[in-house]
Structures are given as structure tokens and as C-alpha cells.
Image 1 (spheres, rainbow, N blue to C red):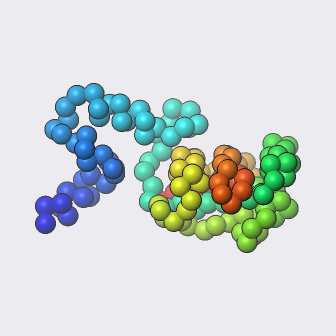
Image 2 (image 1 turned 90 degrees about the horizontal axis):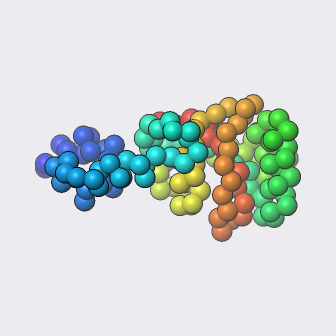
Image 3 (image 1 turned 90 degrees about the vertical axis):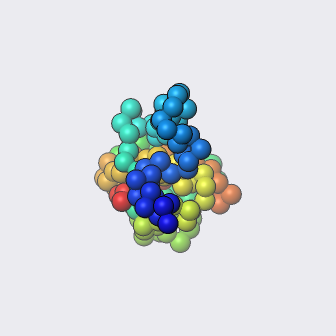
Length: 142
């Protein structure tokens, strides 16, 4: 029963049970640096259990580059997704709300490290998985 009462207190330290030895030493501070999302300009995102994600999936690198060019030229993410994405999420690339563990590991890591943004001014990241080349943006976190 004690683990159930401790779980809410430790939920922000998921996966860090080995380093939880009374707050001793450098391991805790080192881990905090590793947990900082890449590309977040020093801002730390609040832990999330679900994200509302969009993506553009392209089989070929050249098609992904064309989609990126459109985004860089000010294209709205959902419009570019409708034009370039090669999967079933053609409704502006929307994948809906996804919980941790529901996505490809590389896709999930990149998506959970990303700040939420709007389709008109997207913050996005590129990832290659077994499915192809993804351009990912996140609408929301919870």
C-alpha cells in the first residue's frame, strides 16, 4: 500500500526511483539537466501525460524538404499537412490526443519535448522513423 500513497508525490520524477536515495549527491542535479527538453531555449516544459499532436508524414526526404520550405515561407501547418502528408491524418495532420507510450518511441520523445504552438505560427521538429520522415507540431499538453 505505501507505493500507492507515494505515487502522486513522485509522479514528476517518473523513472527516477534509483536516484531517489534521500537527496544525496550529484545524481539528482545531473538528471535534472538531462530532463530539460532540447530546443526549448532554457524553458522547462511542465510534465505532460498527453499531447495533442499534428504531423506531416513523407516517405521521401525531398518531399519532406518541400513541406519544410512551405512552412518556413509562412504556410499554415494544417494546410501544408493536407498538401504533403502521405498518411490517414490528412485533416490538417491531426493525430488527436495521444498518451505516453501510444506513439513510436522516437516520434514520442521529439513530440513531448516540443512546446505547444498554433497552426498559423507552428513550432515543429523533424524525426525519421520506420514509417518515414515526420514533421511534428504540438497543439496542446495536459
